[in-house]
Image (cartoon, rainbow, N blue to C red; front, side, top):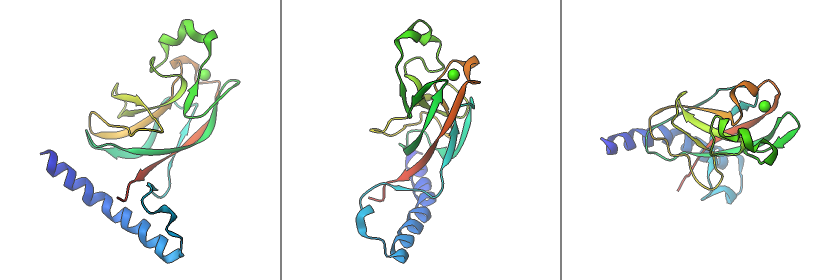
Length: 161
Ligand SMILES: [Ca+2]
């Protein structure tokens, strides 16, 4: 069953990887990206103000997914990247964050709108525990999204190796 799922995913990703490769050849681009993760075309906008952002990325349980994230967002006056920020003053209510184990405004990925979530990290892939669409949000208190600004861009990357 697992093997069958893996083959199906490979077949689905292969045309995209081939298209990226052909585009590089056609543009005469140097081989600098060889062996490096290649972003898929486009990317999803993750708005700080939205409690759920649909990434358009569908994942399969157990298959690691790599994301490339860029941008800056703001929690009122606090600037943050996808790694979030720390603020000792907010420590008494930190346990009320939607994902208590991650920093304020850390980028959180969930499969569907469930509790199958994890912080998005730069140094490791997101490994979904179930299959479905990936949604993301800024880790905040549920009633406190109205003072959020900015957005991140998230791209799924394919390892061509
Ligand atoms: Ca907020």
